[in-house]
Image (cartoon, rainbow, N blue to C red; front, side, top):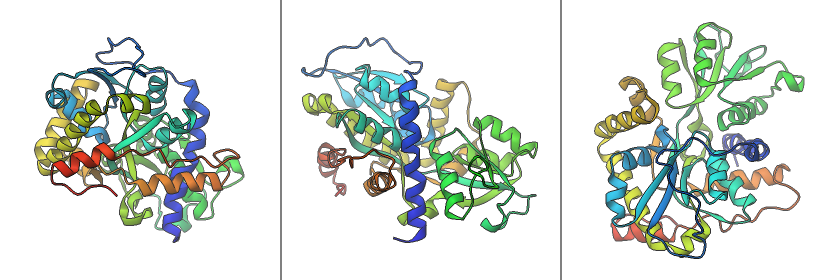
Length: 358
């Protein structure tokens, strides 16, 4: 395994611990169309699917497909009830509380949820790969990692994926953060605050997800120091999944197959109609958040993000294995052999004449 692959793995693994520590503290987020009271679906079949998603660019299939009604039309007589979340832990808690049946979510909460539920969740498809960059200000003289000493970098949140990627990258290059006796400072802050800190020259750079990366490149006199794709094999690492409660999947495979068919169709449409898709995505994000993303920034962000139904399994499994080897997942190695169930996805892909996922 080369150094870049090790670094890519490290960037994903340490967040498992941070997420495990704070996931139990967070509750469900504000819901959209949240008129679905918890019901016991574990032992019954149903024509209702309660699904969560985030108003994020890497949840594009759900944002567009749910917002425009594409998913509901594809689901036919299955009624969709939706909830919008702002963080993975709150979506996982909603699954545990039987408030939703499925959700789009990032990789680390998916692993943590699977472990905490003792195998009660399944990843049934991928949603996005890539879309994170390490940028630096143009006026601080950073040309290589040798120039990091004494610098201060921002990250979106303590223990989130980009925060961990930054800290792992610093360690790989021989730097400790100040709280660990080193000479590089990492300042977790909201993305909007990171922009202010860059403009006021309070930080020298930041590791952020899109579309914030594109915004900072345009507005904060920064340049890309590292595209995180360069740390992963073939430049692919999962940033969003579609997961389902295992009991719901077992009792309602027909419902999930319809959902996956809609998901695959939306993925294909987005990739084949990029300009129209970006316009639709922006319109739906505006409905959910009250704000739009400047067109040039959205186009730039999507140049570093892949919308896909491939779950990029290798990136998740390597991260989990390395996390255990480093002592982050307890004394007993978690058995993740059942975290994926791609049977229905592959049935859909085969029926549509598309390549299946091994």
